[in-house]
Image (cartoon, rainbow, N blue to C red; front, side, top):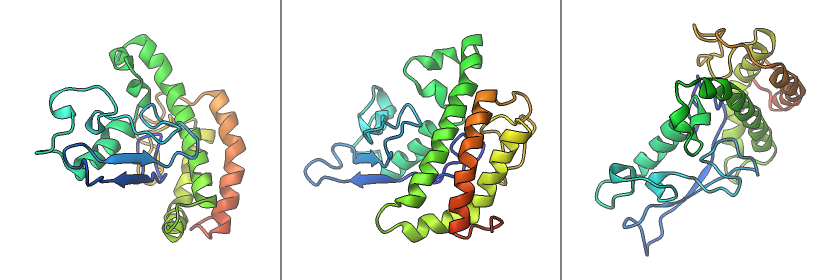
Amino acid sequence: MVGSSSTPYHDDLFFFDLQLPPSSYPESPPLVNYRSFGLCLNPNLYESGTVCLSLLNTFGGHGTELWSPEASTLLQVLVSIQGLVLTAQPYYNEAAYESQVGTPQGHRNELPYSENAYLLNLRTMLHLLRRPPVGFDVFVREHFRRRGQHVLRACEAYLTDSCTVGTLDGQAHPTVVSMERPCSAGFRLALGNIVPRLVEVFKEIGADGCQ
């Protein structure tokens, strides 16, 4: 799964192991494990690999939020992870934080949370390039060979132009909301320490525009 533009997860790859136990599926939902590399970059994606989602019966819910043997599908699981987990503002995925949407407290906390998520997102990229899942090494290299220049362009926008994390378009260009809230100094400092490592690994794989 590829992280969407206009989120703190843009350009990264997310790997999930899905199991369909014959003894329980489809009466029960599939077993889903996230390849986390020991990082917790989202409230719904645990370091242990657990995916916290009502549809998987790993989080509370009711009605159509829960798995239904008659109606639920694997596609629904994937769409839910993409649309409900890897969101533009992951702060509100924290338990009970949804009530802070539109409040001063939520407004104050959502940006630093997204900044930290993006830093972990970049660390995940480094892990993937060093230790790609078995059988996906070519896929991982080709993805970052194409997208490496966009990752670095985004980092430059955050570092130099202080664009808000997760507001760039698919080509890593600023949008109309990118300058509304500048990145924090602490985030820019941490990002500046990661960028040289990204440049190094992107050069190693011959990423477009990074030679």
